[in-house]
Length: 223
Image (cartoon, rainbow, N blue to C red; front, side, top):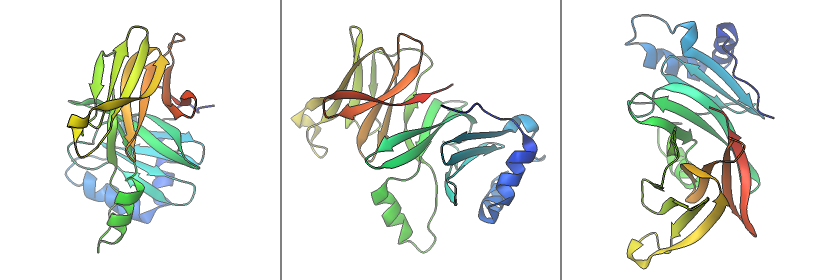
């Protein structure tokens, strides 16, 4: 069961102090701000072994041992709306929903395994968040991923996700990956695999991915 958000400044600051490297990053990002973050700009959420912490405009995500990733830059700031976890093979992967003042509800996660491996080889590896997709406040008729390798459409009372047959040549068309009932609200990617956000008949924002015998519910988003 998902835990509700906790707006407790003291708990948030205690979490930051547990990770000196994150404190340094927070101070660096906060330097241009004339005042420390207000209590309303601090938000702490937990889901399983993961914790997300908003301090000012930025969000930091931890597992039970160390920091994993954080938002950074003009395209990733905003207010934390949810922390949710999705399965990817044997792993559990944390995602955050951040409302950007211009781009709306954005979904971020850690760099994909291949990108993380490439980053680890750099002299100064970073742990910046990866832009994984979008969620919309209202039902959509079609959502296309930023690379156009996937798209989701509303077809009658069902949502259908399509994946490119050849990522290097989109002219070769698409095949159906996921089909489930509901209203289309978002599309998320992780390691080139699609997850679709659907508003169900119970007004739940459910996340589905492809299973061996059809769409499987992978998680729930609370906004």
